Image 1 (cartoon, rainbow, N blue to C red):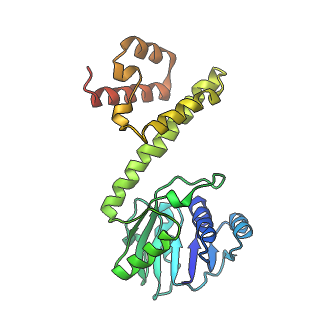
Image 2: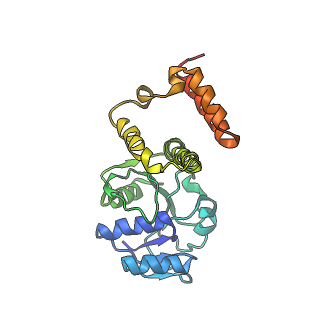
Amino acid sequence: MQTVIIGSGNIAYHLAKAFVQNGISLTQIFGRNENELQKISSELNIPYSTQKLEEADLYIICVSDNSVEEVSKIISKKDCLVTHTSGSLPKEVLIGEYRKSSFYPLQTFSKTKNLDYSKIPFFIETENTEDQQVLTELASRISENVMESTHEKRKYIHLTAVFACNFVNHLFSRAKEISDAQEIPFDYFLPLIDETVQKIHEIEPKSAQTGPAVRNDKRVLELHEQLLQDESLEIYKTMNRSIKKMYQLP
């Protein structure tokens, strides 16, 4: 099956790398950023172009959500399957006279970070059972965890991912701002972060909660609020209110 990846960002790079590592050939990687395409092409030995989109049986659109619809319009071939990798968009956002689908990998991607692709869940939605089988078989060559999912379900999967990943990473960034301001090496906190993440592999997150809010330790909460200001103070108050509400504390 001739396959083209459209995009040059984090998802495009990792998906192309996963394909190559698992013996799946790519006809082309296509996009606008020639510098990034050259890097991917050089590393993975995939033909690339910024001008001519090659004919293919499958086009995988790996661009930002805001660009998916516009990019989908450049595919003029009718007898093909087109898919996007967005967690929040419906397959119907794709504009063209081709078969539409979604191919969502549930992971955070950075080009500088290696990943074990076999552990990444893939959620697939298509217009017919034949295409579902095609994309399921393709994803199964990369991952051990491949599932069918409707757009309605996928929206909540993506929302959960934002809470579990994006928000948590933002809190890491805020925590590092505090430690940097006091010249405290952030490395000191890495064992704590690692243990926090590891613990929820064995314990329900709600049961694993610790800290002054769940203890309703008003003295420590007030002390911390005195040390903070601006956005970090608002985040601190909001998080503690949420914790208290979850555990029905006054």
